[in-house]
Length: 268
Image 1: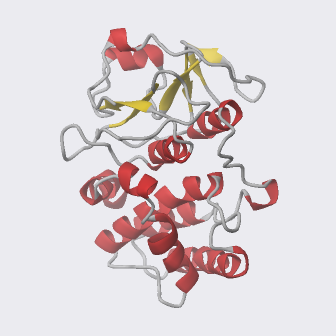
Image 2: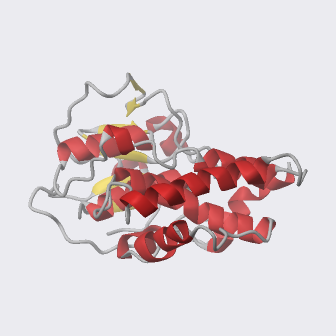
């Protein structure tokens, strides 16, 4: 598995079959949805192939580190896709993109300039929602589907985390809003855990866990804040159930990259 930066000639392989009814129109060879992926600017990973895995690694463009050359950057949406690939045991070829200085080849395959972007069926597919859904359809084993009634569990944690992180007023209610969301999640896990879909990890966990990782590091650094001990199921979910998984350890950003990535929002 390569950790080298992608060259124009590297953008030409892979063929597979996916359903396109859930995807949005193609622009400049890239499939988009209406939702955004990662607006914020390699390590080789060793994974085993499943019986249905593609014969060659899937090419994926992700954010490069801001602090260390040739390392994965801090985009939680990129990690979500990488976690999906890891949990499905699909081989992939990591292509690092400097989002502060986007190369011409990258803008040619993805005019929007966002990551992650994954190549499927000779098309570069953008947006983590679309990518993970496409992977589930193409490679259904092992299944990562989250039942619709559970798919939105914890979905407001990230936005309330950002509100609290950016807040300059300790009395504006942003901290309480985050605590309310975490408390609801704690109650849910108490009754339904250890994962969002019960005993097995699912797509909802892979979407939420990178955001909780950012929450832990950024709030610890900028606010000297951590998830309170009064929320033991959230703390255990993060530390014992998710952050300790091999797939998460392989795909997580460096703490210094998370800190650097959030600095503009904190200082604005």
